[in-house]
Length: 196
Image (cartoon, rainbow, N blue to C red; front, side, top):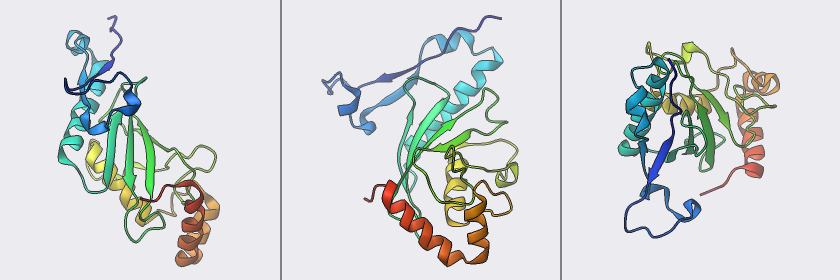
């Protein structure tokens, strides 16, 4: 079956008279699936897009603590950009963490690939790609959901999993002396992350 290409559209309120997306506050944007989604939703490839869109709307509506922005990537309906405030009692406390989640077509059965936009000195983040290394053990349910994924990221920021290291140096330091790892990660974060 030939599945039409899916796109996401941004619907801007009538009171907003600008054509530049950069000048529109993210809270003013309402995301909606393009009308051609309905035509192909019987196809398995569309299930992931629908589920991602549903969960993004739910997270936007829930206004989760520490979640500052959740939006679709302009070029890819299966990619979501998120800005989180660093959780308290972590090396990233009070700093904005920008990450992208690339969802597979098989979502929610398979997890997204999570990539940070800035390097973080963390046992579970690869230094060459800034991708988060996390396993199915980090998921408590049989399927994934965006709210749970955000919670899992916050948990890993506070309590890394050195048994599944992406950055061996950071993992060894964390296991040897957690307070030294925290100081090192905090110092490195000052150079790349915004403070609010």
